[in-house]
Length: 479
Ligand SMILES: [Zn+2]
Image (cartoon, rainbow, N blue to C red; front, top):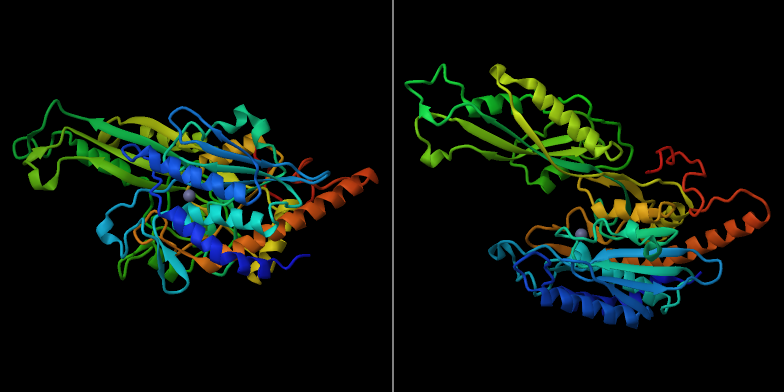
């Protein structure tokens, strides 16, 4: 097989230039940001893809949605098709005074890194996809579908579009490169994403605010009532204390306590909330966060009993728990409470399903092998606390496709934060892994077709991703 390590090394100077040019474009798809910049990033990428051998390129235009770049390289005979996903829009830069160099002037920094908004999330991964295609001179041994989205950071009509036109997303494997390694140099496959649901809880107890001296002590206090309710969501260790929310042991990798404290920016001496292994708390169990509270502000507080208060709550659920079921469990918990005998009004908000990738199938195995070749050590599994709605939609559109989540980001790259950076070495390794994967996956696929004709049961993704039992394939497939 070709030595993709040498090839990637040769490609890196140009890929780095391409990444820098792409990062200069402030392609922010939020309202009040110029749409032309998003378009400019789109056009720039179309050029890069053409140069990398993707001749069949289309833009998918949906209402209020940046154009999605859809490219296609047909599969050679009997070869599988791999969908390559990434997004070209970026988060706004936030407070620019917190940046050590202007966010849209990508800057080389120590340690072989480049700093800039979107340089890691997710432009590094788009460039890595392009690098893998260049490594094959645009003629990979697999069919390729390009799906480069332009509005991932801000919701769009694309989020649930794929099942409406599944033929555009037909693939045997999908490389969702909007991720990265748990820490630099440690190859990581993300295999699960928690589900997310919002809700609002409110309470009205009085027609209006009343004197706390005259009435306090007997008047029903809305803020106190709400605080009593919120305090029941966790036990004294900080573990979630709501029935019906799933939590299971986590067998993948995880952060050390020290690393977590650093990543989270915990102040010295601060304890973590909850008990048990941290991976289990972050990725394989629920979390409940009070994300907003309406109450009188301290600076303008009057001596009065508060008549009305409300809180916004963000719930995260186990990747395989039905998110609506989890949301209902929390609603039921709050509705049953009646602190001081007072009823709360609970309004469920948006809910996005979690995701658990079946592991151990042929594409997964081929990618594990390819990543081992690229980084020199065996990939670990992690999960992500955030959800990616599109992953569910893609998996609905192509239910037999194995989903592989990885990329050039890393746990310390500061995505969505000031001074986001990417390590060029990680991009190079993703190029090697992906280029190698094309060959490994194609070879395994052809072998399974051959076994097919011999009457041996197949084990490829197009039939059943869980058909080959392995220690990791015990998770039920997603519906
Ligand atoms: Zn992203």
